[in-house]
Length: 466
Image 1 (cartoon, rainbow, N blue to C red):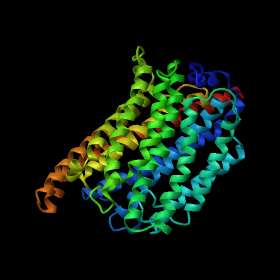
Image 2: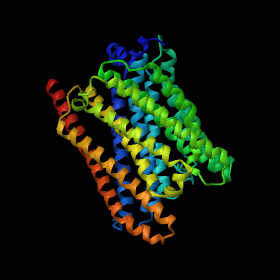
Image 3: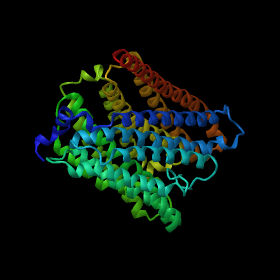
Image 4: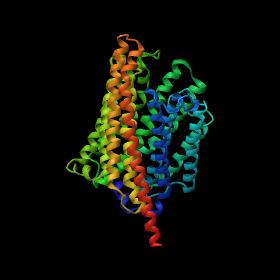
């Protein structure tokens, strides 16, 4: 690919026609995503309140911590992230290819079917129908519907990519890989342990599924969209096309190999555990090349971080991504695992990557796109600032609090102290966790209020013109 291909995203943005993109479905995906994010946060706060013995729904079986924990994770993965990404894909792919999606009616069918999948999953979990697989708790009667939905998503988006003419921008490499990888990953995680393999083999497959869901579904879509939005907003090509290819092929080669690091010190063969450790450390190097590429793109124009809030969300997410993978490269070593295994360190790590990185990126995309879809600026810049700072500080405090607590818990258990001792000194950390979670939820409420005010102003303006 030539240097001209690097600017394909900006070229498509400048020369697109309004009929390429169904902006209505983009808005609906975004609003639905935020509703599921709010649901997930409420579930997370309920669980955090239970840890400090202030559960307002104590004694109600369907609101028990175990069930709401699964609602919390599933609503983030399939409710917020998936809907947010699907909205962004409906915006970006037609602009990158100068081709509409395969079928707009199919887009709406997928939208409705996906909300059914997520909603039915939540109902199934609350009434005890969950599968015994982390992040694969979707009831068995939902899995075939979800698998069909993923196939339809691939058909709807791969068709315009196949029809496009001219050089292919690296964003589309990530998208095509994600469509294939996600379909295969979901099938592997939800069908193989349920029907075909058991014992340590099921554990190994479950470990691959847990991590591949992040690495082969969330990561390529997140990185691909960053390669689209950042150059457009900064109005300059990505710094290094070569590094973008290193990131793509590094992700493809190393990420599928590291899932076993969730099961160190288990009966799974040690060569698989060692391989997962090495590949996890390698992924940190791959992520570093991606971060360098984006900061190289920003070089000489750093002041835009202060004035452009979407860029601020994007680059804050990149910093959290580097810290997440740096932390992960330590926590997967056998030495570190002796300390932090089963501790709150892992919970802090998960929040840093899922909220601090990908949720921040999606919200930055929403902040960039909503004014363009409504044809008016945001109603309140102050609410945007509150959204950013409450989200950034909240997730930073939550991750740091739980990571530090994980070390203390591990030392306590290694010293063979009574279990109650670790629970007692965890209490103030868990209180801080609640406060941090409420801050993040406050940021979401500020964003929702800003969307409401902006949409109201747009509707009034449209009524006046009519």
